[in-house]
Length: 398
Image (cartoon, rainbow, N blue to C red; front, top):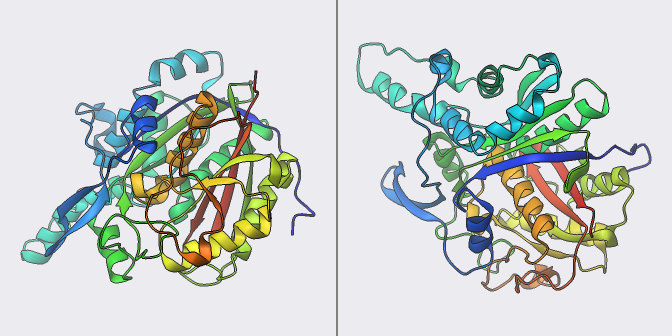
């Protein structure tokens, strides 16, 4: 399965920022992921007639945006700009050394700005008078183009939308651009915000949890939807944390269900290891895709056993803290992994509920204290249709 995988050159994560239910800085994020504190909230404005648990970010978003971006203005864009603001000055200073034509933007999303058009569409259905819908704000390509325009860059700019693997694939695509020497720096990541379309869509699939989700739990009954943004500036220069490799696969087993034996998931992890020239035993922490649906969790643990065998890698899912952030999931979880490598003192806790007996024989993180330094971490993102990707991040230990 991995015979033709070529080694990839690591790229440096020069700057990064995130925004989610975990907060908007590493201190808040670490506290949320190492404590029993609940970070999800109940909303009654997303699904008619009932409350639902979601991972909502409660930070104030940027209110003033440049007039040139007004046609694509949306909460999704403001979410992205608020996150970018944390590192914007550093990015502009760093990239000033490069030609604008060699600066790229690749972003993952699955909702774009559709939430902003939902009220207009509702009025369209309720009233006889036609409504004006600004479709540009919900086009998938609008987010990357808007960020490019905001930064004044002139290199490649595009959006990847492969459902829950979108952001991780954007990071892998950015690494490929750098490895091919097509760009000097690339802004990658993912942004997705809460909207009724996705909440009601997953509800129609009977995939929403009735409470806070419990990945690999004995009583797991579905997911919580979340919102997040994670942005990273990548370049060829070394950095404290490097994006080492990615492994991608497409099992195409079912339109929404993964292959029950986790074949595609295992292939993605194996390809990532081969591309980074690492062995399974080298991975110090694995961030599971861990959605808390019966089929996803069962297949992922089978895939983990296939790849890691008896190595008993420390692992956890963080979705009981963030919700499933869809097109941004790979970005917020890569950001979590980056913070683990930078700090070297903690790991994200798995939930404390009862585990499924069939999935329990794993080294779940139930104590957040990291007792020995780790050098490499892996993060999994698996999407509808079997669009799978695993990322490996690494650091040089002192």
